[in-house]
Length: 119
Image (cartoon, rainbow, N blue to C red):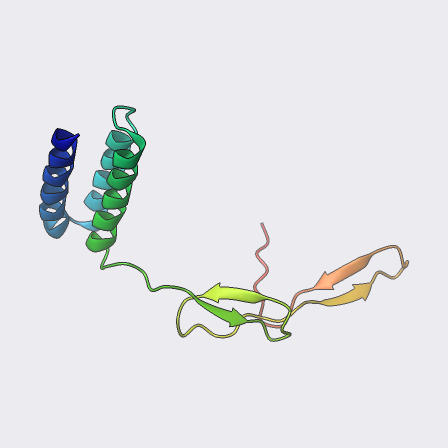
């Protein structure tokens, strides 16, 4: 067990040195390799989980640090709490509903400013 922890520390130290000198594309490739090594089936669960967390930390460091923690914001109509990045505008409120001309369906109309992506 001690040898495994020593190996993990050595891997972490070498990973930090590599993260500081690598380009973002290389950082992503290194992350993929580290995750593959973590999930190779040769590590017990706690060591594997620590390995995966470390690979993520190294990738975050190479990409400029960890992303900000999301903050809860209530929607305009008060029906939902949405986790958003700090400083984001309030989430849109509920959609309006209209009945189809034949009366057999209720159709949700997106709120103003909502983006609809069509194929």
